[in-house]
Length: 116
Image (cartoon, rainbow, N blue to C red; front, side, top):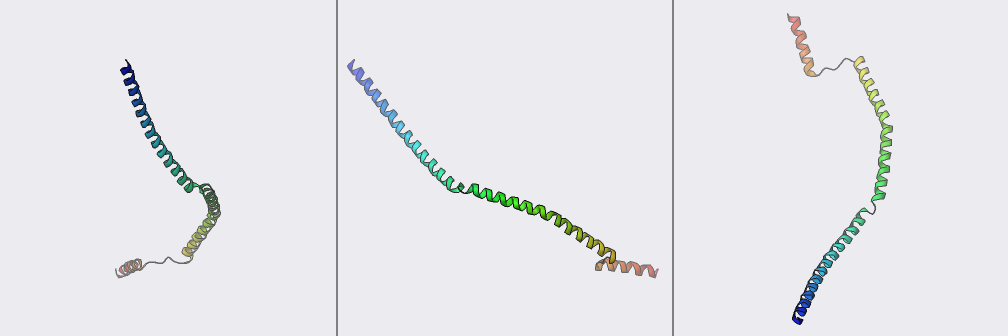
């Protein structure tokens, strides 16, 4: 009976050492994971530290750009209308310019009619 108690005690002690060894390895793994998370957090902080200010500045810049664009749209329309008027005036007061190929065709057709 004494031998059975000693063997059982020895088996429990060995099982306890086995569990302790696994817990120690698990603790090391958790420690490495925590260190990696700390490094990742530091790097993320360094990268994103100035982001809110930069986003705010860029939002203001985009807003100013939109406002400038809104102010330029009527001026562009006026310029387009003025160019359209100039083009219309040119077509009214000047005969349209023919390109050399069109002149050649016009000349052939007018000479051909005269000869018949």
